[in-house]
Length: 460
Ligand SMILES: Nc1nc2c(c(=O)[nH]1)N[C@H]1C(S)=C(S)[C@@H](COP(=O)(O)OP(=O)(O)OC[C@H]3O[C@@H](n4cnc5c(N)ncnc54)[C@H](O)[C@@H]3O)O[C@H]1N2
Ligand code: MOO
Image (cartoon, rainbow, N blue to C red; front, side, top):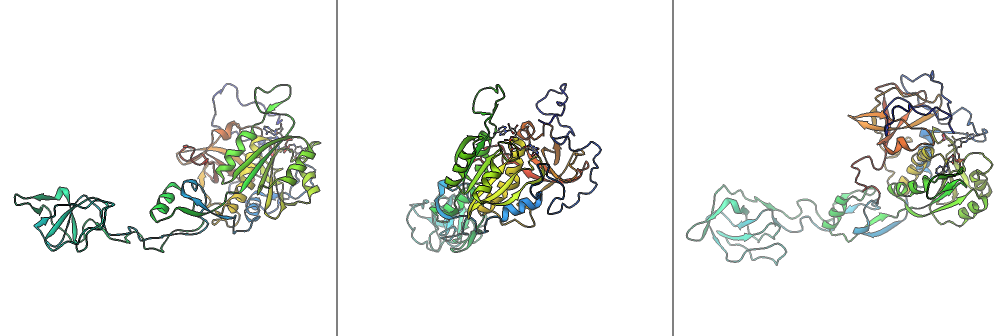
């Protein structure tokens, strides 16, 4: 579709790392001036949309901010979730300790609990973790104790097993100086009952689950995952086998559900509707999802049914076209209070762009993790210097797949709107301001869910 020559065929490698960041439609001449310092984009881009000019195009930062603010900050519904199902959710309320931690004075080491200065007479029966309350110690007495066991009343210290010796009269001798309180973890050392351990809005991580359990929780109060439904439009799409006779494989049906899950949604269904306006209308009127994500059909071709269907439904278009490449026909609509639609362009990298520009900020607010939203950014901005000059669009932001090497962002080839080869090897998308970027310029990086660790844990 772009009409660009294929990348250098001699460099037939999985991904070459070059400064080859052409616009898909050849809209940017090679002489387009790279920006020495990035201009601040205007809230509304002033240039024509290229699709008939039927709407105002929103700047990329403004589109993200609008998507983040489309939903009330209160976020979604609060639910009590058992700990084993809460990973990846957001805390709807602060995690407050239900107990002191530790809940009682405990021994930090295996050895003896001792009372007063030694040598000590050693009791016959020791104290183990999880057992009943031991008898108080008298002055000059010691009792064998295990790590985690309750400290007997009136004990003054714990002597580690390697620091004590039983003499031939059966008395315990200290081989080191004994400091009062040593190796005793006093009740409440970590927290007192009622202390806030994590604020509302925190991600429930494996560590948070451990902390919640230690602090007495069986369930946590979390924000319900927003329900998302994916509607894949297009008569040309195959779900299996090789492309043939003008038909191509659907790349978005397999890609979007796990990605939406990584952004916090519960994907209830993926439906392939073809280019059928009636089916689309019916799907939009009957869906109970919080978020419908459509793919394709956003432009103004003869079978691009998204705009006419939204118009017919009286939906409120919150964002209708964004000054970003790829992906500029993306849109965000409110179907009714609490029900949203993100229209992703059909070109696969353009769809990724729409997902990260509109669906991500919207979902962040819906899952209650929008605390950091301000001035349009949906997360605290994170930047990296770009390794090479990057060609820009004269008016629009560009999102360019990059890998991060030695703390520099390396632009990847195969970044055309219809290509997934670059993004599949990327760690993030660099945000290239209108006019382009110079080698060494700090660019905002949008992280991809798999960028850290690659364990797949993000796709819960
Ligand atoms: N006259 C104009 N035509 C187009 C414009 C424009 O401004 N004026 N914009 C172009 C841009 S940019 C994009 S992006 C696309 C957006 O098109 P749609 O959202 O209407 O998507 P389709 O036309 O249905 O498909 C576009 C392209 O993507 C392929 N596709 C669609 N779905 C999938 C899928 N699930 N998996 C893989 N590939 C998919 C489809 O076959 C087309 O090649 O419009 C331009 N046109
Ligand atoms: O080029 Mo289209 O940018 O949005 O694929």
